[in-house]
Length: 458
Image (tube, rainbow, N blue to C red):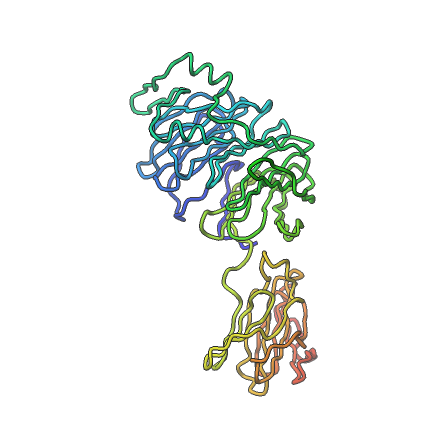
């Protein structure tokens, strides 16, 4: 995990990324905890929902609340804008899901069917679908095609819900009878398409894959489940086990075939979708995790925990590289590659399967690469990686490094970092933060130097 930003606060249970990366403001109008937030993709809007049963829509440029949506009868767990339509969806402990038109400031439909708290609800990124998760141990997929045909093209909404204008204090108009009927019985414009059953305890989160017909869910049974759907049915693909407490949130990585989950067991786990195996685990000492969010464009993730939030990357996007006067050496896809500046050839030189690779989707753990330009008889490289908590490897390619070979004859060791001091001497920072030097023989075997291995960091 590469931590990019961390903040301390009270428990964080709602997160959303904006495409900008600057701190905007703080908004304090909810009465009690806020559990869900989201940014609009285009407009300068934020939506929030909290334990005061209210949904507030804010203009973050004007730095004020525009209006409040009323209708839910219990805590609001999540709120989410639609990517294209003037909709937002909310999930509540009152066992309902509501779709609101934020332009008309009214509720356009109420989805009923869950018989316990609805922990989350979100729109599909492309199709007219909504996925929801509930403590009734089910995940539901809702088809809102009828609602889109009825309302998005300018048809009036049939199910009303009062909107409180922050400036005037007036509420939106609508038929009281139709509103009560919709609240009690739901609307026929949005129907349940699939009910996914398989978790043994309440489901806390469910997410759509950004491009494939997949759903990921996490529950109090400590399991992460992967589901697949088509036009006529949905079914369970596999179950991923490893968390030791309730799974709080599950999302798909937007750029890699990975699932990221976090839990009350104080860990974030990364799962390979194709292998259905855990490939990385990150832990905190004392803080339980509650929410996780993925940036829509950048390779960034954010997680909320008991003491604040953290923004991080799973891997470095810039590869480890080094160069001499004629060639560029860099690490990519388990290989040390060589690019010749003169003829433009780019070839794999050495397989790096021993450098602690954690799976092709998660990337290699190489941290830095250094070329010994003081040695003219052979090409010596030092590769430092995060494998085994920190390790280094000395790689000898010979003068001509353009011919690919299968494995390295290098010498490995553990240490936080290493660097060349001269043509045949290396300094190593070990895990105790002590510096020692070693001599590099021309046959690439490292021999400790008794005169200089004296713990220079003391």
